Length: 423
Image (tube, rainbow, N blue to C red; front, side, top):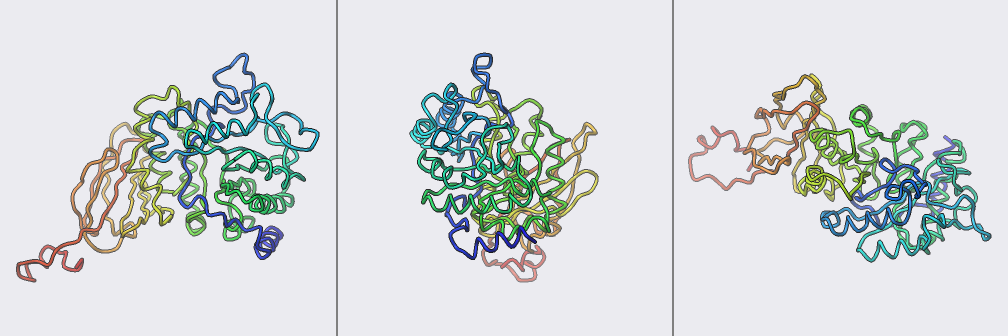
């Protein structure tokens, strides 16, 4: 109750509400944490340490290798970028050995590539990695980030308690708004509160944050992906209404192109994150990512599902024999459909379903397979559709309504084709 009252008071006050006009579709980019963690020894690990070189390298790759062209716009710093103490005026600054030119110079470099720079802080007394937190410095830090030209803030919650988070997250929202610089505000708050009501009020949370972590940190693991998807499905009646333009549930980073996922599993994570209207932040090494993973992550048809302007999160409708079937409404009466397998029996599984079972209205639809892009033909919503889905894999499609011309033959003959009611 205290959490709800604090947020509601803040929003009634006006300035605190996150009305910044950004993240109208789920933001896309690259984030350091899952792949590079808190590596600070640049002498032993010059290519992997958290330094200005790492983020400049990733900006170069986003710019030159087609990532920016398909929508990946953010280069996001995570924890361990700071000096261990604030300066004499109480301001944060980058570790002088690893960021010798300062964060503003890095932001200028990233902006010069036509990209955006994100940064990390924590509401607690310390960050999770033990660096200075923002508690008691909210306005100073927000102004510092704005002066540097920061475009996104990931705000963590280590070394704080429930009551301090209920104060601190709205305070930082207000401070960011007061700077006058639009910055995407990513809140880790719900993840520390179990992600569900009554401790988390998503209606009010959407007034102060642009996206929020609902669940624990993702690891380089297929099991983690399956657990996250299952949690989203189990709690979809809470999560689906919370999401929309400017406010997104965040199941954490894409691990496609790292160490653990097969090609099928990589397609599955990417496709499901698009169905979930999730932010798409890769955490991998873009300097040596394999071509098959580039092809997955740059799939324009799947990205178009992710970036659909209606911003409606998908739902699971069927779940049997370790096969899940999901749909997501898209603009112009279209739908995205995903058939996800978590089977491990070594052979593709023949799964049948109808569009009507997925909450899709009566009518005729043209189906396009998105992995790879190819036509599957036209189907009535009540027709059975059969697909072969690989173990730990996905079949993903877009259903587009078919508009028929008035027939030149007898009405009774038209009714035989069972599509008269689509006119």
